[in-house]
Length: 58
Image (cartoon, rainbow, N blue to C red):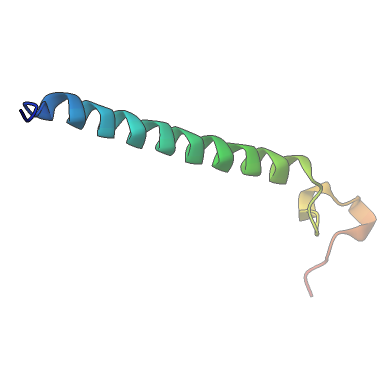
């Protein structure tokens, strides 16, 4: 005898799997963003340069 399908349960399981996958992607994205923020940048902004090193307008 075949079992009766339980569409509500199956849907909840799919939604739960999607939510976990989305949370994992968001966590990885946040970690990558935090790593980028922790590393010093290639070029420093003009405001961070000493007064004698700031570019002058000509």
